[in-house]
Image (cartoon, rainbow, N blue to C red; front, side, top):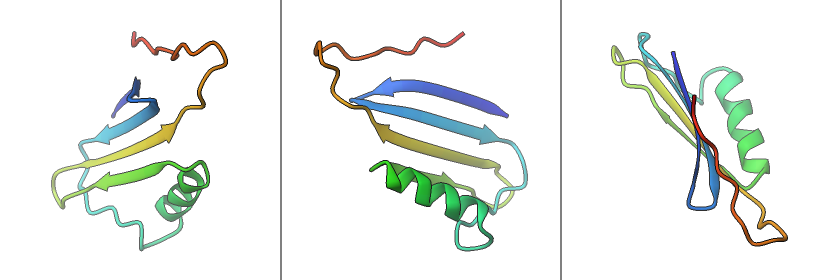
Length: 78
């Protein structure tokens, strides 16, 4: 599993990838549907790419508030 967090175009972007069997479907079950609801409540977007046999990538884009000093935060990976 790979996890990537970054700031991009005024949004926090969180991406989780695995190399499993794929086939994840937000319409089935409540896990991804609940995550989609929570991301939507923050005016964000959730994308799911999960072709059968090719693993799954879940990407959330969450808008960041404009800071009072006008500077955008940065996230650096380790």
